[in-house]
Figure 1 (tube, rainbow, N blue to C red):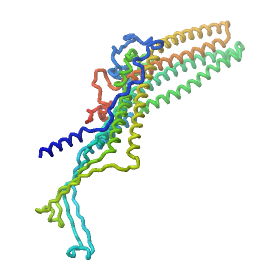
Figure 2 (figure 1 turned 120 degrees about the vertical axis):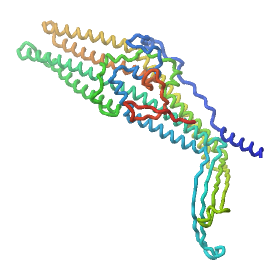
Figure 3 (figure 1 turned 180 degrees about the vertical axis):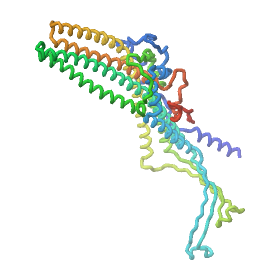
Figure 4 (figure 1 turned 90 degrees about the horizontal axis):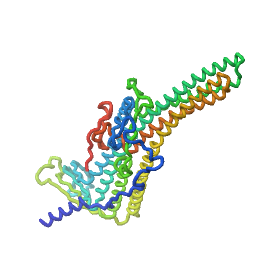
Amino acid sequence: MLKYSLMAVAVAVFAAGCTMEPKYHQPAAPVSGAFPSDGVYATQPAPGAGARTANGQAAVDIGWRDFFVDQRLQQLIEIALKNNRDLRVSVLNIEASRAQYQIVRAALMPTIDAAASQSKSRTPKNLSFLDRTISNEYSVGLNASWEIDFFGRIRSLKDQALAQYLATAQARKAAEIALVASVADQYLTLLAFDDLLKVTQDTLKTAQESYRITKLQYETGTGSELDLRQAETVVEQANANLQSQARLRAQAENALVLLIGEPLPADLPGGLALDNQDLLTDIPAGLPSDLLTRRPDIMEAEQNLLAANANIGAARAAFFPRVSLTGSFGTLSPTLGGLFKPGSAAWSFAPQITLPIFTGGENKANLDLANVQKNIQVAQYEKAIQTAFREVADGLAARGTYDQEIRALERNTFAEQRRLDLSDLRYRNGVDSYLAVLTAQTALYSSQQSLITARMERLTNLVDLYKALGGGWIERAGEQPRPADAPVDYGAGSAPVAASAATSG
């Protein structure tokens, strides 16, 4: 008896611990050990150089309410986190992956079900026993089946499903971070169009006044038709630009409405102008290796790699025998009333071993496919790291140059304004032609547009750099980050409320 008990324990331990998955080794990061620091990267904002400072905190520790100070933008982000349909699909994908994982994990456990049946058959008289041509059989009992996972096939499939589930959770996290940045970028674009419209309206107003004066001079014989037509071109170009910018502004608002998932509420708080957004400019970049734990897209790629690694174990186990146990226990009787009488007990026990002998190369092909899929996931994991490195490096390059570019454009705009004022004065005093005024007016308008565009691009770059460094998952600094697979209750409050994660090993 002791011998059989020890054998049973050994079988149980072997079944629980054996796996044919390759040992996982995290691929080396195919990027430099540090971000570039020379040239355009050398002029990063100093800590505390702006009105607000990150105080050396990493992006992942800075809540989006701390990064954005515009209350109108904050409320738009709240609404988007509650309503955005793409984000909602990401959350539902987590629930689907969780259910799939639980389905696969259940295969490790025995299945037991209750069954009751009745069968009735007729046998030809010349083949019947004691001339009984009609026979009845009633049964009630329990059926059980269990595949003993000696070689870890089911365990590998469970590990694969778990990794896919965790990858889906990280994809949801990446989607939420991207949504926060997208709402902010689109809001800043809308503010830029507002500024462009104002500049164009001012330019149109000035051009119309110049055209009125020039037309009056032409009609009284003191001005030329050339001056009149030159003044008219400025008016019509400004008119065309006004319509184009109004169209683009409306389309930008439509894009923002799509992101937040509902029309813009009428009771939104007042917002800040583009120049007053005051985003955090000195968030430290850290090291490229930090991105491995801060970027959910990289963690998603690694979970997909782990899933592919586990799938190899399942493909290897397919070459080995599968052992299953089936059995039943209950009562059996030729009559319904005799089912529970003494002597009606019935049972069966049927262990089975299935060994693949010839499958036409299917198992070999499945193993080759699993290895190829793992190599694909390795390449995608490395590409995710390289993409993250590039996004951060691009953001740092832009952050190191935009401030100087904007200061130069501000000086240029001031100079163009003075040029226009002086040209207009010279023209009115008969010293210069109207062409000089036209050229100065066009140059000023172009410079004002370039300045607004640069200011918007600087702000959107800061937003995108915040996202590239992993920021945007927590709402306020100091909060405990939610698990990536945390369910969301969309019915509570203005922003989604995360419940505790239900992940189990």
